[in-house]
Length: 611
Image (tube, rainbow, N blue to C red; front, top):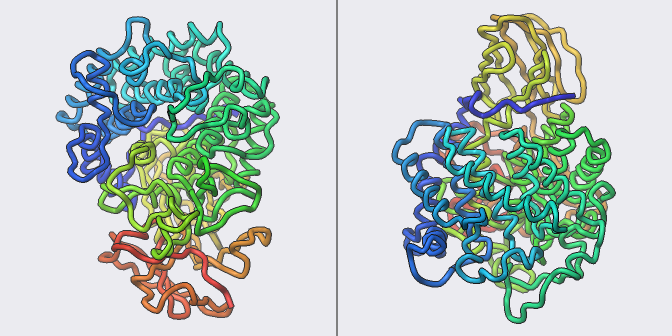
């Protein structure tokens, strides 16, 4: 199949739930992040990222500050800003973006190299430590920003900077063997290939993928000693081939291991490469890994990476809710992976995963005011031990203003701002609707508008307009939907179901209504997940729910949710947490998981003891 995602410039989200969050991005979060990058927010963790570029350009004196990958924060902010400009005209933001891009151009070296850490601090060590130094990772994020500014905002300057950067990388690594320590450049090169049509970037992405795991001792052979230097915040053992997934060739991998974000960034790139090349072994590896993660290594919220040690996967079914790491970046990466798998196959499993991530694990990473962010997203928090007791140092009760390692906030911003690009795909005479999110799309031969009551109600309406010819519309029916009914122009619709999608023929003027029951449901983990044995969670529609101490003053540790207790869906409350539908059972009050920690320090639990 040759399924192509509909570009976000052809989609406008009108959904009440998501359009408000996109406005939050454009009006609050993206400007706030820019101030952070310029060190203009009192009390927030220092960034100094813009100053690093000024120093690299020779326009400011001082010491490089921050992580070795500090440049990537600026790149992801630029990508989010590109999508913001596509959502609405903002001349002031556009001018500021141009200023930052011009600064980046001045910081770029004559040969195309671009990295402020090594330009300012260690120019003699460029590309000498691929395991830890994130040069290719930073380059990847900058390339993605360049592509986004060109595609979404019509700006060419950063794309040209990134073409010089990518050519510099290809000039070196098409001849010299090299493996990225932190996967990301593979994703970026695939995007650059698609926007330029230059085969060289596809070949470079494939070379990075193909080399990984061919020699498990590669990093041990090529990582120089550096006593006392901690490039990533901690020492990475070059012999730990599981950590960066270099022990097995990518086409032979069967289970997720090591650093969660690196693993899934690589899988997203593998899926994109399989789509571009028709490489069936690469595709089958992605399918195996998708099953391994979603069936044995993922929390019910969609969070992945259960261990704080190196932000990693551990063994199958090791999913403790209270020590869950669940990095926000990992949830964003899972959304990337799901989107790219939908280009390989219109399979409802991938759309279900995408829905799970955006409504739960990813969205929980941001405060509802758009100015505070979680790096770690546990499923259970006890204020008595969170951030204090050994083993719980990473667990927080409240979102900070920023982080010293700030990869997650701009990653989430670029996902939400670009969400329109995740909703629709097309293939020949078929248009696919992956998510029940209200939107207007110029898809295939028609304009399609969707009005949706999701995620609070199970109903949506599709209106086909300005269609020159009949075509096939495929609507994803979420796996949790019960008693789904589709009507076409007021009558029962003739459909065929395939892999979770309802296919029907439509033409100009048709109205398609979908409705289904959104009953509350209890969620249980596999019996092999020891930490949640005898416990249950609540869900409704795409949303997982949780319990907070502020709503349940009797305490949650000893509370139980009897097996026979009826779960009541309460009325929509527009004044509570930005507007939610709460639930109640056995005297316990539950809210959507994404909304927790917006009312001060709190105990929180997703899973409750079931008696």
